[in-house]
Amino acid sequence: MREANLLAMLTVSLTKHLWTLVVISAVVQCFLGALWYGLIFKKSWRKLIGIPEGEKPKNQLFGVVASLIACFVLSFVLANIMALAGTLTATGGASIGILCFFGFIAPPLFTQHIFENRRANLFAINAAYWLVAMALGGAVIGGFGS
Figure 1 (cartoon, rainbow, N blue to C red):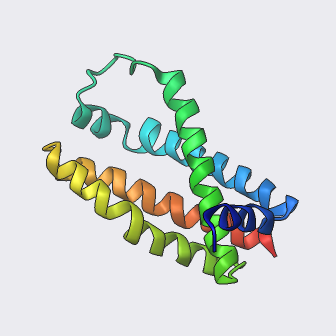
Figure 2: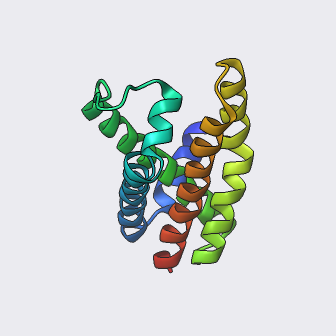
């Protein structure tokens, strides 16, 4: 199968309803990120990445826009994997999200933290966010996709 045909097959396989769920999934993941890094783990995360207390992170608007775009791409790919697997339930979506996390996100994230000499606490905060975000994104797409 040619690569162009595969991409066309994937994008066509998503109905308008699923496209809406991809957008909702991305927004939910970004909202989770805002809670995760801006409220729940704000103090320890900022300390671990070296942002002094009271100082605003640089390029915050660019970071939010980049995060939304990245979460959209992630949700789009996750929806396509779920469609190919024939899974459109909340539990199935969450399971595929978790599987994708352990296969595609955790290994490079772990390696990156090792090479950047980052602390294990930072890896735990970042990895836990992506694990929950992937499971939640899959559950949103699957739970409302049927």
